Image (cartoon, rainbow, N blue to C red; front, side, top):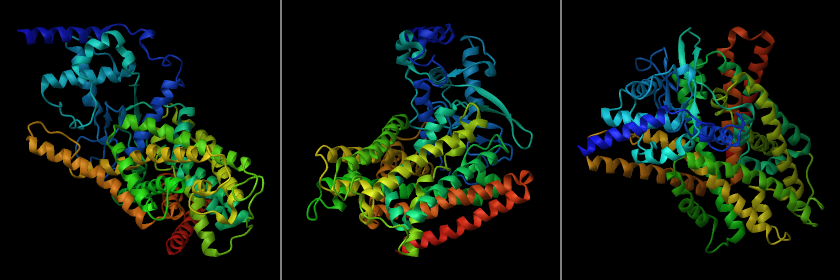
Length: 591
């Protein structure tokens, strides 16, 4: 009797919370201050990090990463997959129709009427609370995809707390829209939420990474006369190909990811190639972050006998691995610290150049520099390094799909690349002037190894550098981890499984996370040159992902809208990029 009474009392309280009129005072601070409030910036930034984590889709036969048809691999992708816990479209999510049906059924059976989904904003704590209560009564997932093991759903005990904080406990929400795909099928989707300024922030965060720390080496290898124009040309060309991606996305509103574009243009083979490229890119970035962490600590406190570079790589393993066990929303906050640290490093390197009056490491008495490359192979290596910082195309389709007004995406690209070009050019020029022919690996390690700066500079720069791997390595490892979890069926709980099987899954998840970080460290020991890793990523991955493939997608998906002159321009771009990709990769690996 008491259980029934408690259940009715809880249901009554839930009914009150779900149906009472919302007040402006219920909203978190900043929520009612417009779409560009601080809270909405934070929500948009978190979604962007989640898109980066979800960019690997191992199901190469699936035509749309975030959609499902009535049958497996159905040509008609009529139902979006959405994760109500993370508030993003997700290939591992549940059918949107199932979520809304449960929501309306629960509210319609004694918990208020079922409103039209196209006239309502759905709040995260409403959705998760309803799904929890509905499924606890039904004892099933109502035909949805199994709930991921780590999905965070508020416990029933939080209901009493919500009576005081109500909807202020979260401001995450979504609306719906209907779109028509290229075949004329009408599909219900979650409407985008990010504004243009928020998309610019997310895009800049993607583009401004650790690759810029090696740009002085790129200028050294290519010289002033060729290096600066090449850096600007890389920026202009990748910005142009990003607009081609945007136009290709406009051909079908259900295209939301880079992999979707590949499958739409060339089928499963293209999606497999993209998955391999992204995995290689993630591996290379993970290795570069390990090198950045270990090199900075070695420059500050290392020696050749005890605290060697290799030992600091093992320190990096033990420091960075625990962060991969953290949930994604928390990791996205760390990512914000990463971009802040990177920008701070650029400013601090400039300040260091002004504080030191003698070379090396000074902007007052600059080092001798070269106008021309000294060797053709060095020029090709330099091109790869100069190309590396502009590799954000893998996430651009997701960022456009998440916009309130996707037609503004092209304009945001111009602002994004202007900011990125300014940051990259500043670091390249400042670092080259300060160290000249001494440039090698990352410029910050050179700075830490150079005497003559104020004593507070060294620990400050080392600390800022260490924040970047702490912020980016876990998010960088997550796509590989999620893919391996899916391959080995470690990402779901099935009711009725034995304790031993659940323990085995937990052990498997642990080994996957530790193993991915161990691979990063192992490759970092085999290839200890930071600038070489960046050069390989720029010459191979960036040329492919940022120039060659976007042009090929555009030629296929927009073939009816391309004039003869533009078609030849795109083909020439593919041919030139292919030549430099092969030549630069060969030179970098062979050097």
